[in-house]
Every structure is written in structure tokens, then in C-alpha cells.
Length: 131
Length: 364
Image (tube, rainbow over all chains, first blue to last red; front, side, top):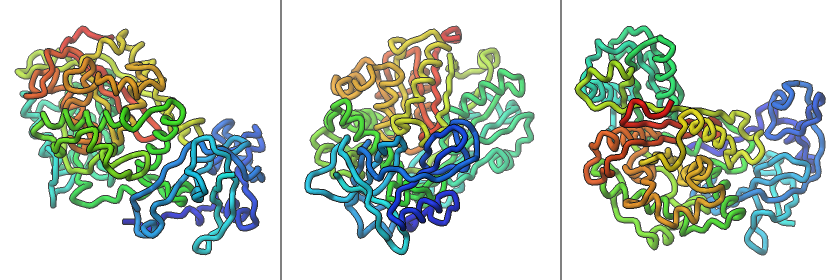
């Protein structure tokens, strides 16, 4: 079993983690066609421009779907099961995958969520909580 | 062949399968002029390493990626059509079970989703199923008809690995693995090897074996991946569906036996809908009606598929389609099927469809 993978060393995602450390949610923005994009890519799949900036977006969205892991697929996930992962569609369009924090009620597709910023194992990241 | 093949390389497994396939075809290795090798999940078993063990210097050799069974068949059709070769051997060998390959590792390197714990194919398939349930009202009982039905078929297949009875109650009592998916909704892992010989209809007519004809093929890619809207619903499957029906002039009612490559049962649900065997969102009620079970009007994965028969990345689906069309399927033999369809996908990026027939003049 592999350890939990992390893309934090990947330069294309670095600004995301820097912003998360400051409590801001950022995604890529194409300066050529204005498309927002996530996950990060080195260029824009809409217009093929590589002229990119990172822009802050509202840390809020809607649960597109979610799953609950009852099996750990790596050693580092063993003490975390059961855990919930949601795909959230941001109000501004892009889809983000992240942990969903347990709330009072079980999550549902379509629930509104807000981003929380926290540090796990020395890495700043984002997780979601039902609004 | 399938099951556990400890100590064997994927090349050795592929070569053993190739020897069987060439013998079955009534040809010899000297009659081959093409080789298309499909790589294992570890990236082994390419045209060079398999070709070397086979001892073949051929006019045309090529490798395709892991999980590209249907695409290998299509490449053979294209290579023959282009005059690059006439008689092509397709190979695939897998030893992921005995080598304990880690399917929880991200296929394409670390990414943001895997960092959040979205690992293993069951994660993304589970997201798509949860969405399907929420949008269309699909129930566990309806979806479970796939796992239960595949086991019913596998019980008629002496080569199937999972043959223990699986009732709906058994299924519903299973714990979730990645909720809403249970263990029986997800492929097993097994070793195995498969090979085919593909040649022209003219050449096949001279051979002692009953040939199966390729009536039509289509593909479509969705390589924008996560940058497709609603990507996990794999909307680009409907583009391959449109093309396979247009290319053949056929429709779902013409299919006597259906094969859908099924790393998870969710893939099957999506393809039943997109290829028009039922309406979009109606897969749950359609399954509940029993069409795809033994005795139903749309026999589905009559060998048991990847959920119950073996994990050979769709290659055994193609083997079973050929066996059914040749009338060699034993206890599970359908009544004189003439047309079989094989649908597959390569993860979240590619779709492929093929229609096979006992009749050379069917399709385009």
C-alpha cells in the first residue's frame, strides 16, 4: 500500500496551497479567454493560451456528489475511515474535490457548503462543511 | 486463462494465450504479419517484449496502453484496412493479483483529488452513482441487480472465479466499501491472459474455425477529463453511441448479447443508458425488470463480467462474445445469437464500441 499522495510539491498547484495558508480559495484564470479552471493545468483547454493568473473565488458551493470511504486504500488513511469526500461545484463554476466534515445531518447532493482552511501534517488545505 | 498465475511475467502469460489462440484459429505463427500487444497495468507486455518471446519479426507491430482491449481490436481493423498487415495477433497478459499491484495509487501521479483521499476507481464511480441516485432516484435494489445478475451468469461458467450464490438479500447485507458502492459492485483482481487472431473475411473463409465478423466499430475520447462539465457522468459516451449506431445502421433492438466492460457496475449502468438500451436515468427500473438476467431479452455479460468472472480488463468479454456467437458457451449458451455488442471505456477518457456478428454482411 502506498502512502497518501500529495501534489503539494507540484509547481502548478503551489499557489493554491499558499493561498489556503492565508485563508483564501484560489483557482486558475485564463487571461486570454477569462475561463476559470480547476484542477490546475499548465494551459487553458478552452483557448490553448498559457497566460494564466490565480484569482480568489468565493469559498462556497454546492455538493455535486459525495462518497464515504469505509475501506482505507493506504496505511495513512487507516485511522481516518470512515471519511467523506465531496465533489463541490463552486458558485463560480469549477468543481473541487475535498474532504467533507461530518455535520449534524448526513450530507445530500445539492447541500450548500462553505470552505474551511486548515493545516494537516504541515500542509495548508481546504475542506468543506455543510452551510 | 485466469485466476492466480504466481511467478509468471505478463509476457509469459500473453505468449501462452497467443499459442492457444493461434492453434484455435487453424493458423500457424508463420501466417501472422501483425502483432498488437496491450500493456499490463504495470506497463509491461508491450509489442517488443511479447514479440521477442514469440520470436516474430513482422511487418506491423504496435503497443496499446493498459485497458485498451476494444481499442486493440479497432487498431487491428484499421491496420488491416490500411494494408499494413492481413493477419494480426492481439495479446494481453496480467499478473496484478499475484504481484499485489496497488490499485489505490493514483494512476497518473498525485493530484488534488487523491490528496483529499479520493483514491481507487471506486471513489469516482461512487461519486457518479451517488449523483445518479440523487438525480434519477436509482435505488440500491435496482443497482444491485447488476452484481446479483452477474453472479447468476457466472454460476453457469466453470471458468468464473466468483461462483458462490449472491442473492439480493446477500447483496444488500454487504457493507459499503466506498458508499454507495459495495464490494460486489467493484471488479475483482485476478491474473490472466487473452489473445485473438484478427484477419480478413477472405482469409477467414479458408480456415477450419467458425469465424466471427466485426460488423462495425466506433470510438470517442473525452480527454478533457476533469475539465468536462459533469465529467464523472462520462457524457462523451453518448458520442460513441451515436457513431456505432450510425456506422452500422443498427439499433439496440438488433443486439442478441451485450458485453459491457465493468471495472465497477456503475460503468454498466451508464453505458446501458447512453447506448440507448433504456432512456437516460431509467437504468435502475430497467435493471429491476430483469432484462439482463439469464432468460431475459438482453443477456448481459453472460460469462459474469469483471464482477464475477475475472479481471482481464474486458478481454474476456470479447472472448465470451466470440464463444456465444460460435455456439461454444456450454451451459450458458444463448439460443443461436447472431449479433453481439461489446462496449468499453478507458477510465474517464475514452469510449469504444464494437458490434460482432455471425454474418459477414451485417453492418457497414
